[in-house]
Image (cartoon, rainbow, N blue to C red):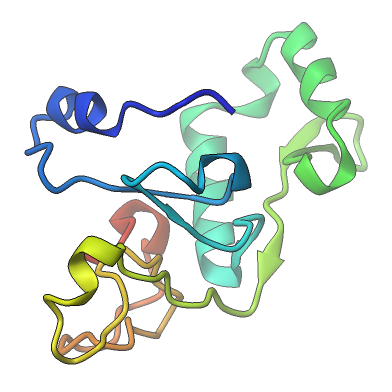
Length: 151
């Protein structure tokens, strides 16, 4: 994996580069002090997967994709494939699903700043659930993908 310039990315997004971190499942990036290693992120909770499929279908309809791109996407390994042929010969998005996502760890530089030992504030939220250290009400399932990550 190529090194990630987390600070430059944060600045490009108009955010402070200190502290800035990347949660990544690539083991080759483990030694980077700005990378927090997480388990492989290969599926989404059911409602979030459905929301992402709906968003992709609306924003980037499979019927409008270039045929070369479609063939490329259909040729991906089964575990990485998110575009599938439907029963009518067309294509549709199918996002792999899971029941829940384990909370992501805090970066070592921030662990000592949390007296409650809570999880990361950027742990993806599962439908109808909340981050383990959240004081907010549980999130509604509707729009889970567009809401993105809990902050």
